[in-house]
Image (tube, rainbow, N blue to C red):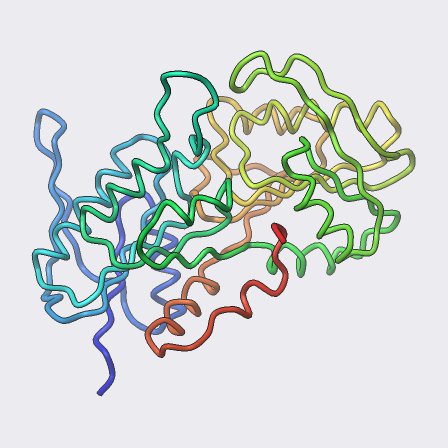
Length: 314
């Protein structure tokens, strides 16, 4: 007997969820979102989910309402007797708070993991976590997927000569190293020092980019400050063209406008977070097919290890 499957969405990821459901081969499940005058909101499932394998798609980028909506949907599914509840979180918010980096601060990502489990999630599916160790914050299965396969195929098709792979900071060295091996090209690294969050005091380039076409890889682009500073530095050092590849396009405040005015020729991102504004410089690649395939394999109890063959964190 085929298991009953339902794919549902919060407000933050509805377009992506519709695409995932379409790739899977079923319509997106029906839900209702009700907001009260004081800002409180309620979510409900508009069809029976008793005994179903329920997949709830919601990225948890700001505002925090997106996270709380996901928690409410998980709780509602649990109380409606869903068989299993999969939290499909393309972008896992609060992932940058993965440790105590100074006294008297919270470990936000651990708190979010505890909240998801307390709400009733039985399985997590996410993509390109900011730190690999976040998987250990959960006591339930975590499928940690990577966007590297779609990035690799897209860049390979561009057939860029004299390629150099780069990272905007030393934390992305492993990622850049694997891409450099995949494309059989040189690598350059930026070393940066921060005065505080989203504010860089100094940056130094390690490697040669003169007369090269550079691709900068990162997992998150927020204010775009680090990326633009790295691009400017590489341009000063003689880079011919500069592209950037980032999985999660937060693009806060005026980041898109800054990208448009920068020396960056192209920014390649995924649809884990919907773009608030289009740009001629920004290319969006969809991850819907990856998530749909992983959902199928979970239902059919098949291996998903093939999705980790090209893993930029190894």
